[in-house]
Amino acid sequence: FDLDNLDKLSSVLSVDLIEKYFEIMYEDSSSIENIISSLNSKDRYEGKDQSREINELIKIKERTSRDVVKVKASKLIMFFRSMEIKDNPALRKNLIIEALNAGGKFDFNDLNNNYYDNIDYRILMNYAVCLDDFKERLRICRFIEDSEVLDENARAILYHNISNIYYVLEDNKRALEYINMALANNSKNPKSAVMLYTKAIILMDDKLPYEDYIKEALDISKRTDPDTYNFILHKFNNIKK
Image 1 (cartoon, rainbow, N blue to C red):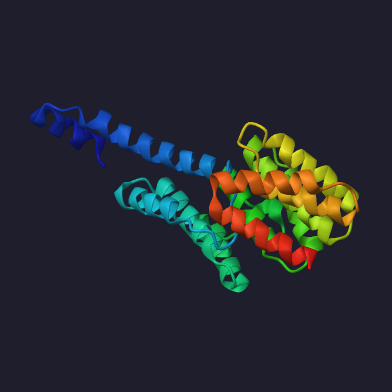
Image 2: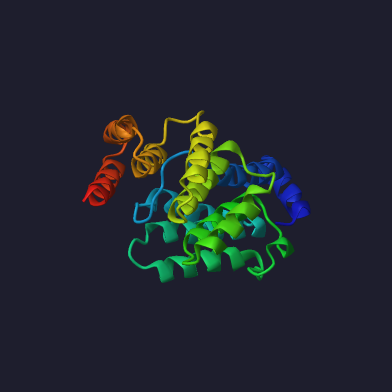
């Protein structure tokens, strides 16, 4: 909007439209930051419904006049949609790539060539999870680990992902180290049932006591999120078989 014209119109209508305009801009940015904070503070897994966040972001994108807010909302919409995909990893990966390219062409070969804000690191983390090459996954996650912009919630998710990579690479010592770091960084939120489940699986694989962790994971998820409870129970029963 042209601020001079808004100022003139304010006089006609006896309303400070410039103040209202900046209130709206701040509200949109604040709403997006709240969504990002929520994203990093509770359990998410592939196939879980993300429609509440997607619908809120669509409304923000439609009402804002700021390009930077539109781009960030677009990135997050594609990112949340990628999370809803369960059995199509190629489609999930394509959505994440599209999200990373929303602000300009993303350099996947030399990660240092890109500009990042906090959400770009979070999206890149999920891109790494889509890769079949676990050493490449680890390379990208260690790059993110070296960044200094992640808050405790995002860092907890990163450590959880690194723990899973080390577990697949059969380095259970490092896997256990990182899942403990994940749980420590997640301490300000309700305990993550999915992180507790991961710790239980690593301990079980090493033939160490794990029962308390799987029980706590199931108890927490049963009280707070039936979908997560069924997700953990299904995965655990498959592993026991």
